[in-house]
Image 1 (cartoon, helix red, strand yellow):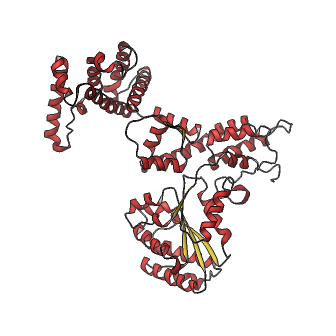
Image 2 (cartoon, helix red, strand yellow):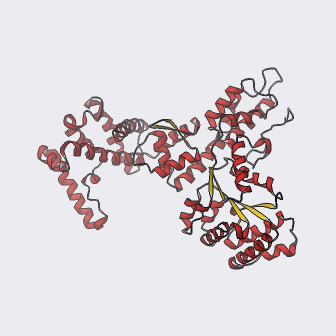
Length: 493
């Protein structure tokens, strides 16, 4: 137990071990078993989820059964040569041979010389029945533009990892992205296929409870505290420690009464104080997901914005990360309520022009599908023959399409609806309201005419980045939300 006056959550964010590594007992046992067997392991997870803490459990094996463990961070390396120099030096330190003469053998060489020296060193140690495990943290850094010979590094690491009997060297790669995603960026031989992947996800309720139990003066409403932490952080260990650290500090300034201590109320107050820590983590996560094409998929799953088909591989990655959880067969939620609210905030503050563009694209697809279902593939001909106003509109659209074909050749779209604006789409919908769209849009025609009017009213000013009254923006936002619900409902049918 901690000193009653000492905050047991000081030092949050650093790799942890012992009592501070909570909720991972089963995973630690599996990990140690794999390292002991000489398996190559890939530890993957979102930032500050505890990847390095898990990987460093391997140090408990160093020196036992002739196995020696060392670690480097690729974020501190600049090239393949630098990486092999550091690996060699750290392995010699693990052997308790860090003398300058020996260590110099790995320093100052090009990547060919450094790699050859590494192989000679390993083969010499194999003769002594020594076995090695090297932890390479921040392995994502291999794709940095400033990192030299990243593809060569991966190829040579693969050679070493693929010949354990010859080199007695196994690897623990720690990264935010899966190895196959990293390798796809440097276009090199496959390393992922040689590794057993461990995805580190947020803590379960038991893990949160173990974290709270560090407090000597255990909260009287500990169940409420744990429930609230799980709701706010989703079990993210760093964010949970942020709140508990702040809550403990708040408790320290309270009067020493029987009611003093960490409560669900002090945890809620801590969120207000530490909100910037949460948004900083979310922005970092947002950046990583956007780079890998996962952010849009996450928002579609959590917010129900079915704007395009979801790649099953992307969905599987999000679930492996623990970023989404299944509510029922057709509904997903974010890993925490707080992060879900953040995603909804992001969606609300998306620039008006982007939201309008998305609505126009979605409505074009909706209109095209509905007309094709009703009138067949030649629905444009049917509409032209049925309605003089539509015939004139299509004549204008065809002229625009021909103009773009002359300007851009094959890059111009053949789809006539791609040349429509929101006002044109509105005209098409209401020209065939009774025949095609009254059931698609639940509600009266007059109500939907008003909804479309709110959107049409801001379309041109938004396109030309002119000032728009706040009342008009609010009306358009609500109207876009109503339209998106119709689109989502029709896409899910």
